[in-house]
Length: 161
Image 1 (tube, rainbow, N blue to C red):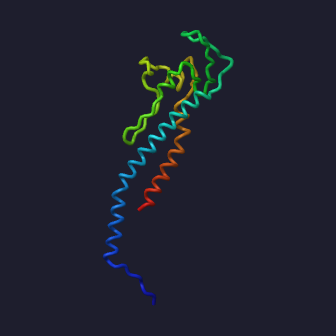
Image 2: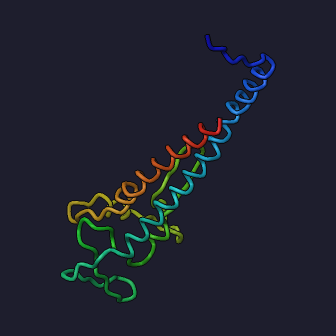
Image 3: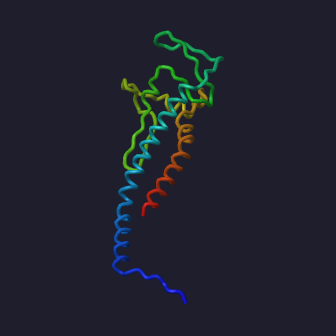
């Protein structure tokens, strides 16, 4: 007959109290970690958008003269992120984190206060303009990494109990 190992009640109470303290700390740790993850992911989406616009290849079959300054612009191919032109769209792209929510996109107006109606036209297209998506592809690229990091952080927090 084997002897069962017994744990003194006092030691068991102490261990349960330590576990209880760790459990109560989880929401605080999780809130801090999730907030940082959201801020980092929002910035990564923003940076991915800007890189995609800088790296988008020009469509050599299209070239038009801008109305201001007499400069020429070669737009991107339909389906690719829009190429940078005046820089107003890029300057308007922001990442804002509030609580457990993240918002990334173009502000309603650029730094000069002039409305940026064309941001959504480029993303979704119009009757005359084929889409040149810039927001959704960046989200699609960053989201899997964000989910993986979130799962790793949850495992880390739970593992500390």
